[in-house]
Length: 214
Image 1 (tube, rainbow, N blue to C red):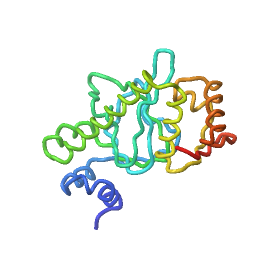
Image 2 (image 1 turned 180 degrees about the horizontal axis):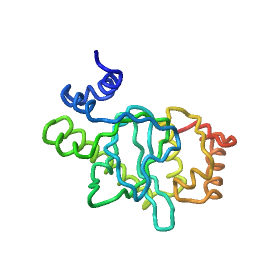
Image 3 (image 1 turned 45 degrees about the vertical axis):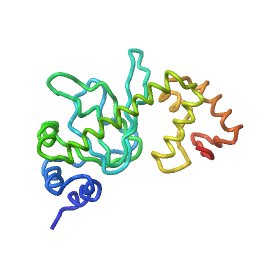
């Protein structure tokens, strides 16, 4: 009888991967769970493997020399982290920080299987290439946002993304948390949120934002 974990993998990735690859993943993976706010990988650490997200969501950051964070992208259910796919444990360490956004359940695949399965399974090759392309587009969008968009527009996009990722219009966020993720100050973010509230886009509560337009 198939195990519960095998059923989970099949349910989430069965439409993408052939049965032989599903079996290979099941035979070589580690099943992990982490609660919101947990740091899964820190800058300077080595990647434990390739993550495949079964449920929940993660957010991925870069950090400058002064410790300021820049949100690069989110990882949602059914996704992997493109940065982990470029990692060589003999040559480099992580240049990103991955934090759990929503309580997450995920698989860890040993790095050694990345190249092997690229040759062995066409569906894995398509998945990896597609993940690279998707994340590259998201990171280019981030660069465009920093270079060409005003902070108020970045804030609206950020809140809209939060609604989509969390699946709710009630966002439990502090102004300080938003400022950190947008590499701004709490005072500036508070002022912009007040402007958005006066425009009818949202309602501000203590440590919560109720989105009306997104």
